[in-house]
Length: 113
Image 1 (tube, one colour):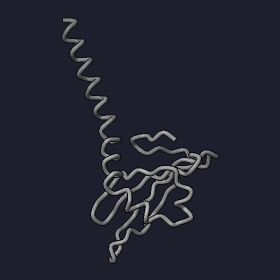
Image 2 (tube, one colour):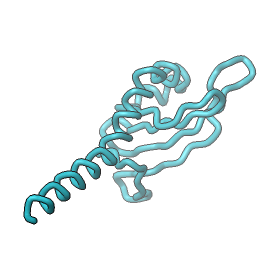
Image 3 (spheres, rainbow, N blue to C red):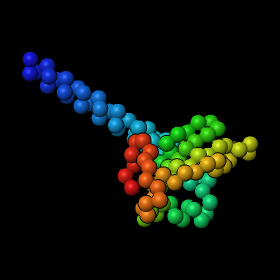
């Protein structure tokens, strides 16, 4: 009987770990494939302040990118829309997290600041 419980606990732990790791792997793959497009879409002044980024959603006409500011002072979730010329245009942005306490949200999965 103990063996069955042990198997169940191990199986449940593996399942939970998979659910937790899968989004990170997906975002890494999206960032690897499409990250360059959004590095080029940044304004030159903003690009100097970005410490890291992750593409968290990518579709033909819309994408979402998570940026972390240099020094890890803030994190932003930016939504882009593809224009008629094929260039990505910033449609909306939200400050998700800020070191000074103005914002204190998270994006799933949680990215360490």
